[in-house]
Image 1 (cartoon, one colour):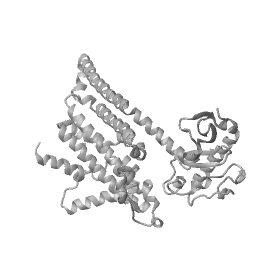
Image 2 (cartoon, chains in turn green, orange):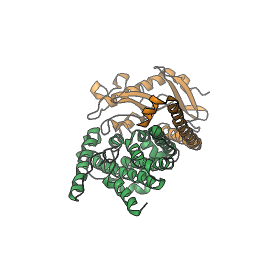
Image 3 (cartoon, rainbow over the protein chains, first blue to last red):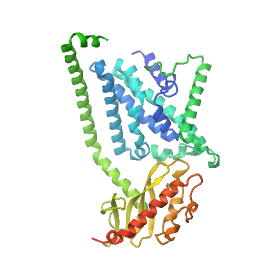
Image 4 (cartoon, rainbow over the protein chains, first blue to last red):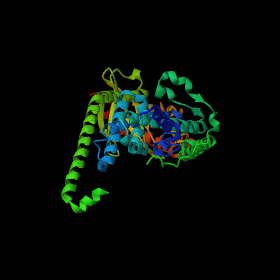
Length: 224
Length: 212
């Protein structure tokens, strides 16, 4: 594959075809896990690991998987990768697991990995499929972190609270108190806040794309 | 699609095909099943160790270290509570005598069950209560967590007669304990759980504090 194709994979995943802001996929973990920037970041990274690994595996076996049974095989692969991540995190990243553990199984029900396997990994060699999963996952991470940051600042007045639990004690410094607690808007960390912030950020991204003269992609059209 | 045509015209071929797809799917299931079995075998010891550490952490908050020279996590007793639920009692012992016990108590909050760990000394005085798991509203009901506020520490040192039983309620219900602004159901559920836990201790005091 030429370098420009890899560039497209990176740009598509992080911005042009972002899983949350362009395709509006994976809304369940997006709403559930963005009550703080740290939670969104951790959930995004776990999803990225699962997406990269399952993209690689589907691409490796793409000539063995027949069309008729491809969907169950994809689900099987995603579910197996999620379980491996779940067990591994529980054993070796336990502090993080206590924060995210409840939501790791939700990755199976996230349609973003499945959409990328069907649309990309099933037709591509292993390396691009791995990179597509990785960068789609990182794009998902960026989206969740941004939504989480907005909800956290307005809802709790903090930014990156508990980041040291997730990333280690050296990250204590990025835990900020942005607004006094008297100014907290509780609704923002409740479910309605998730929909409102996500909606506004989708609009914001499209305005930026318009300003840059890009053609706006219809939600999901590119994915399936 | 061509497969639908073959179904009507030549069932033998489609059966052979179906068999092939079945074998492919089966092989994938087998392969990934093996992968999961291997992952489980690799992680099972570490996960067990983490679970014990978690228990130790929550126990050390309700059973002070100076109270025991044994390991309460492994020195347990099994009893059935008033609702018929089997409870694991963690015992703190010093010089062979029971100095305190800790067990889980359950309350009904605004959004389902609230699970707490309660520590109580041999005379029935509360050593501490900590929330283990809950689904209460963030920002309102979650003030019952020790890291979100001091409310839960209010109970340390109290017992069934102090304050009197009829005052073991939130202020709104005519009791001694503060509710939170915007959340009455959550503290009410926690109060009921603690009261139940104290009554459980009173009923079973001799069994609980017996040094076997």
